[in-house]
Image 1 (tube, rainbow, N blue to C red):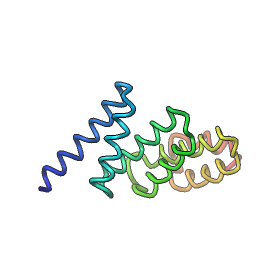
Image 2: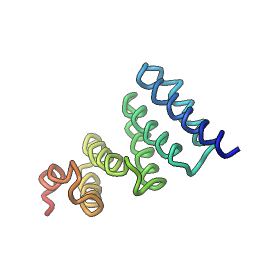
Image 3: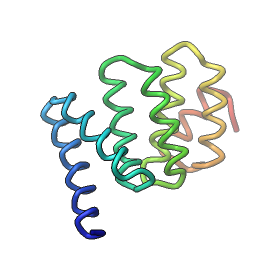
Image 4: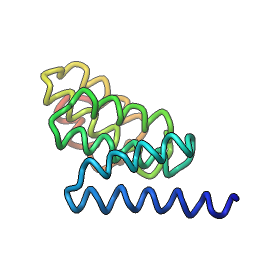
Length: 129
């Protein structure tokens, strides 16, 4: 039923978060994957995508992290983590040595979040107004 689906979505997301905090990254990843497979297009599935990006960053897989953050932005463009996901993409591109790509994303960030927490830093880093 619909109410049990809501409970299951929240439970899976809580499990993914708790497992990540307990450094059970394999459990966290599986909970995220289950949430996305069972409930695609939901807020919780989008949040799980963001968690997967964080997990990928932690294990040093910047390419996977970038892909997950980008997908979060597509799945939840006005979601609660949209600004942070885009900011992480800017920072990861710079970390990978793709400064020009990072500045293109920084411009996108400034267009979408002109007063966002990273706006000043991105303006300075890329010489944007």
